[in-house]
Image 1 (tube, helix red, strand yellow):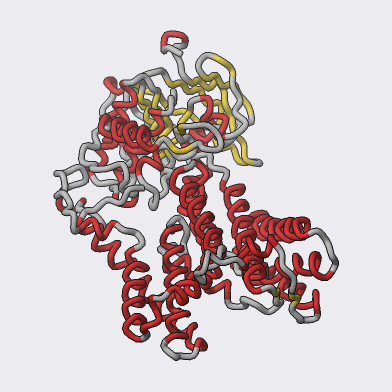
Image 2 (tube, rainbow over the protein chains, first blue to last red):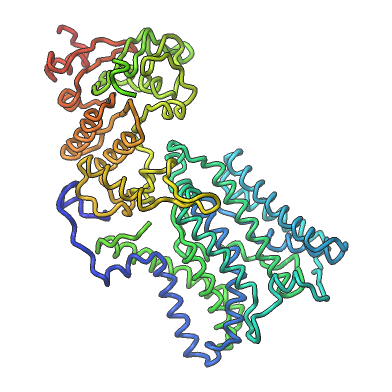
Length: 344
Length: 253
């Protein structure tokens, strides 16, 4: 067990104070931090271009792609549920926006709003089906993932929709870069979303209820937490952020592809878990997920710069996933033995 | 609000509960006074849990009258009973292991500061109140309210649940087998927490199979058998052996 009940008796003596060094083990995001440092050092050694503004832009662009959707999935996993349909929403919603705007000439804001509304509706369907029909969310969202992927493909018969003009909206979504750097403004979206979610999770009643709903739904309900509503809201958030990620990609590259991001559902779960989320719910960290997205971005860019084919990226991610989880578990164990307390 | 306004927190008159053709409890007359600990004992199936679940709004009785704090009541749900001041400490305690102690203490009833949209948890106050209340319950070993509940022992979790019920203005505390699966030392701690709650004016009803324990801490012991109240005795009038005989069906008292 974690504490010294066995020897000190349940209400026995004060345990020893923890040293400043021991406090390192209280950092929830230690696994992803260590992984990040090792990966950065390895790639910097491999390739002199790794620490340049150019690769920073490329790292952050990937981090936005993995991060925005990963943050939504993290919140949902803290609430104890999964969303496999994020990959389909990620390709479908920008397709809808592009189709309405570029193909059918609708106002860009209306097209944007409608595509986000669709994402909200998909999230609602996922949440209500999971809770009302009492089917595991993994199954429900696997089914909706397949369905919406089909819709996405049939929208244009599999062809992408591209935008060739100049549009302030597209600039703001991700086409613009800061000054002469190669860093896309989309980084701002990632940061803003991370800050808001982090504050909501740690500092508000809503956040408390999300952790409680995932930690033990029955107990939370007994204490008056509206677990169903909390979970449905998290499904909507996850779907919405998947759409936002897709739309940022559309803004950044000017084209929406029905087949893009097919492996994004699993990558989003990797982001959440590497960042410290538990598959059982009730645990997870927005800062951890953000760092995990950056580490994935570094890995992708690092592989390119080292001359390794990006087809090895997935294998690398698999490796990273196991490594971070092992470190997370080990440090939590060491932290408990040293008696360090993490502020909650 | 004061105890003087009513001399019974809860009273049941002729309460019967049927589940289809099965009579779970029949013509039960039961009372709890402020500052009184009532032990509910009896064999399995005697109707103890049903009686408690009628008092906390989980079931509505098929027949009979109930008064809470001197007024007739019929609770629509456990939530309604809880809002009225009836706190139940369940066997599974309704605690969330991964959450910190203070987050559990205030779960569903969080203290907040600031106005919308910047309405945040008042963490400082919740940490302080949690520590104060747990110390009063005798949990002096705790170092920080930020520790997760899963490091607490079974007795400490019971004490936390009782402290929470007491802090949130319960007038009646219902405990369903609080000490099953606890060590002797842990059981002592739960008894202490129950007595502290009683001393602050709450009425307490405890279901417990451990008759020695019931006899030690309860002011009154109610023995149930086959859905009826067999006997209600004051603690000082009986020995634990007498109670055990009654529960076992040896009625020659």
